Length: 182
Figure: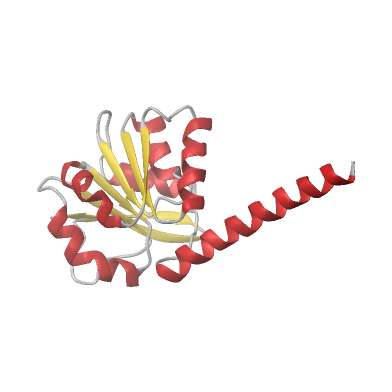
């Protein structure tokens, strides 16, 4: 009986350490993991004009909520990219639990692993810090297709003007979601 107890405790503490370590690693080498409100994601996808059959790519997809919502609410295909193995695992599990595993694909690794899908994406959804957007700005606008739209929740590119903005609510405050084109 004691052995079973210790095995269960090791599994629980091991999972917590794995989760925290993965989140810490992702935060150190990039952005912190912060989940947005469902309504803010939907407002962003509406601003981008997501429709059935579109491909939505989320760089730094976290728990996969944006691409799962794109698939479930708009009939789109979702592709998420995250370098945290925990987020990769959690977003795949969330897609499965939401019944969207056929419509959602997660890529584990850095953003450059998504270059091919970015060229063919209809919409790129971003919920990344201003410092990260500044870092990826030249790369992403060079990489996306001519008709690809980028929607950024709460944060903005320093050198690119949005073509549209909308107010939304996330993390307890009113903020903006911004739409960009190449």
